[in-house]
Image (cartoon, rainbow, N blue to C red; front, side):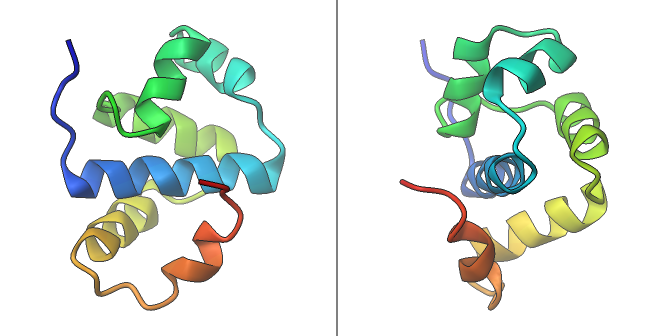
Length: 94
């Protein structure tokens, strides 16, 4: 059963995925840090399952990024008002 994932949560997952690519962090490594399976993290990063707030904070800490910035930027992206999100998303292949 797939949980419904909001556009904001999906955008936040895409930002985390982009930072993983930029920093060279594998799904296997981040999943291990989060205490979940790689396949579950993969579903989360594709927007098929929600990331919880603790996972977002732990992932951001490990990736060296500000969780507040990720949350705000994700909300803005979902609302279509984050003008610079395309440069970040270029790091992620669809």
